[in-house]
Amino acid sequence: MRILLKSLFLGLIFVMFIACSGPTIYTGGNAPVSQIANVPSLSQVDKAVKESLIGRGWIPQKISNHSYLGLYKKRALMAKIKVLFNTSTFTIIHIESANLDYDASDQTIHPTYNRWIQKLEHDIRKRVDRNYRADKRR
Image (cartoon, rainbow, N blue to C red):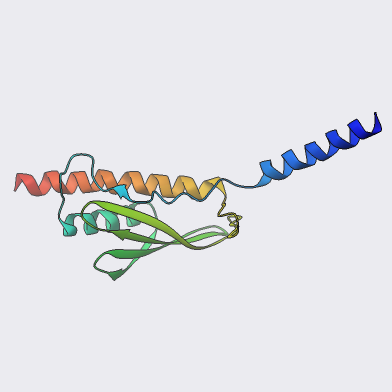
């Protein structure tokens, strides 16, 4: 009986330990930039990335023709990302964060960060399609 209780107790501790670790960090790795455009121009994608960052409250900083740094601060939370893109795909890379329970060894982070990135990813696609349609009409 005593061994059974110890085993049960250790099992509960193990489950609690796993449950307390956050979800794996979301990157949207090599996500397609568009739902409708065959191949949008690089300027359409660039504009969409910049507008999406600004629209979601990120501070964008262009670091090359194919990338932006984004900084987001909300109360005590902070995240810094790099968005790499071309005319067919984009990737969002976590650079650093504060108060989001980031664990580099497990590549886990608070679910709030993942929601921010998923919404940003959705916005980028939507804006690329909007820019593509607008340029096509001209």
